[in-house]
Image (tube, rainbow, N blue to C red; front, side, top):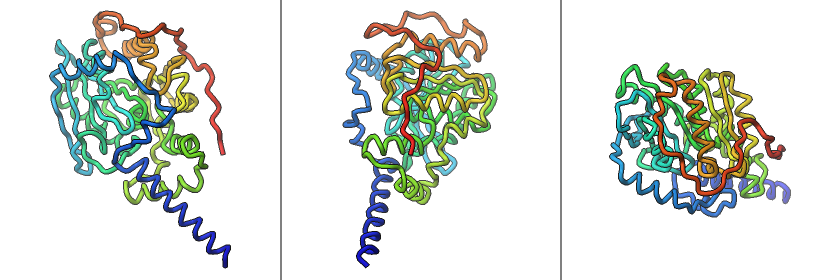
Length: 340
C-alpha cells in the first residue's frame, strides 16, 4: 500500500512538473529564465545601440495578415532606396520580436532588398497564446510570402533568413510547397527539432532526463497548442525541400549546440553550404565575424538571385568590433551531445 501511495505521489509530481514545463517553454508569457541562463550570451555592444538608433530612424510600415486560424499576425515592412524585386523575410528567435532582426535589416536594405520583419504568433504585436517552435509558424511564413508576392508582383525574388528559433522556422517553412518566387533560405544557429532542443535544455538547465517529462509535456502541448513536439522537426521537413540552403552556426554555441548544424546539414537533399564561425556563441556569429558572415551570405545569394553581382551594390566594409578569426567554410567537428 505504501509503495502504491508513493508511486502515485511520484506520478502526480511528474504530471505537475510537465504542466509547469509547458507554461515555462510554450505558453506565452515573460521568460525571465533567459536572462539568467549561462548559455545565453550577454550582449553589451556599441553596435547594438547604434542599430537601435537606425531602427527608430527608418520609415517602417506596420503590416498585418491573418493566419489560417484567423490570428492577427503583424510585422514591419521597409522599402530600399531604389525599386527592387528582391525581398528578405527575417525570422526572429524564441521569445523575441521582429525588430530584434534590425541588425540584419539594415544590411539588407543597404544591399537593395525590401525587408519584412514579422512578429511570430505568440510574440510581439501578433496574436497567439503559445510559442510554436516553428511548427505552426511555417504556415504563417508561407502566408507572409504570399503577401510579398501580392505586393511586389510575380517577378519577386524572396529569401528567408532566420536566427535561432527563426532559423528552425525558415527550415521548416522550406519543407512546405512554396511558390517559385522563394529562391533560397539562410538559417543561423537553428535547432534540429523541438524534441532535440527541449531534451538538451532539460539536461542543461534542470539536470533532468527527457523521459518521462517530454512525452507528457508534448501531450499537454497537443491538447492546448495543437501540436506534438515531435512534429516540429526541421530535419524531417528538410527532406521535402529542394531549396538551396545556407547554414550558419557559432563554433562555441552551447545554447543550441553546434552539433545540431551537422544533423541539419546532412538532412538537406539539395544545394547547401555551411559556415561555422570560430568562437561565436549563440546568435553571435554576425557580431563575432561580420565580414565572413556577409561575404558568405552575399556569395550564396549571388548564385540564386537574378542579376548576379549587380544585384548587390557596393557599400562600405562592415566595421569590426574585435579582431577576426579565420572563418571556416566547412564542418570543423561538433561537440559531443549526450544521448540517453
